Image (cartoon, rainbow, N blue to C red; front, top):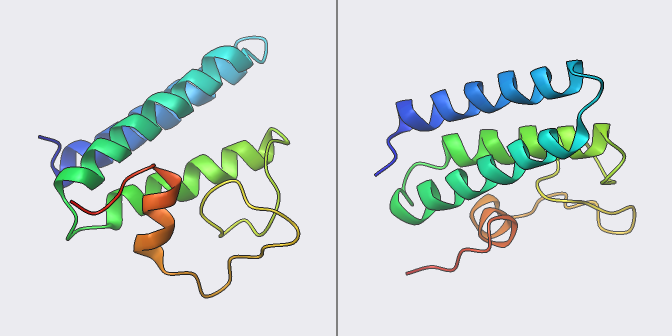
Length: 107
């Protein structure tokens, strides 16, 4: 089971791996794989730790920022998920957004 400290370390590990991939001749396939791996870890964490949204929220925000940086998303930088120009996501319920972003439904 992932705990909050483990999840935090996973985010920091992913950030370092993502940076290393981009510093290696802009290795986007590896960078995208890092984002996909972190998404899977955040999804697992969210399924097991529904009362603490801090780690999956931080992961979702960072993943969204990196996708936007690569030109793969739109919308405000603070929006969770892919975003779009038409749907700003303002005032969205964080739990519902995380469930959509990580394809989780309440148990």
